[in-house]
Length: 96
Image (tube, rainbow, N blue to C red; front, side, top):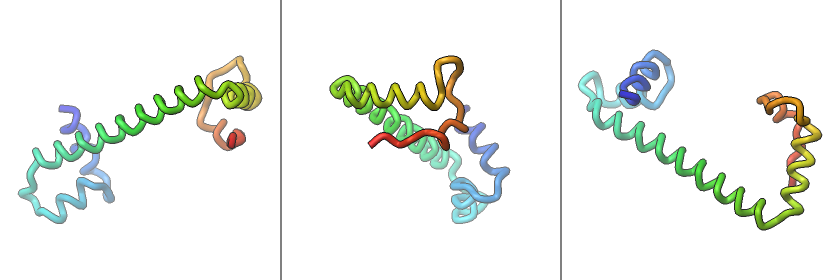
């Protein structure tokens, strides 16, 4: 059902993976194949994100100095009185 909702919403836009697929295959395209492909893309993104988060936690747990610098940057950019927002990205310093 989730992929059906995605298909319905994506088909309304002019440039998307689904539209290119439909144009290439014609009106009798395989709905199941598109659904499985979208599920695979979603799962790949989730797996990549979860691996990065696990890696970041291990690095921060093993390198207290990096953890302290990151915490100081978050405090200086965001503070402790509010939650982070997308606008904070432009004000953050990239820790190296």
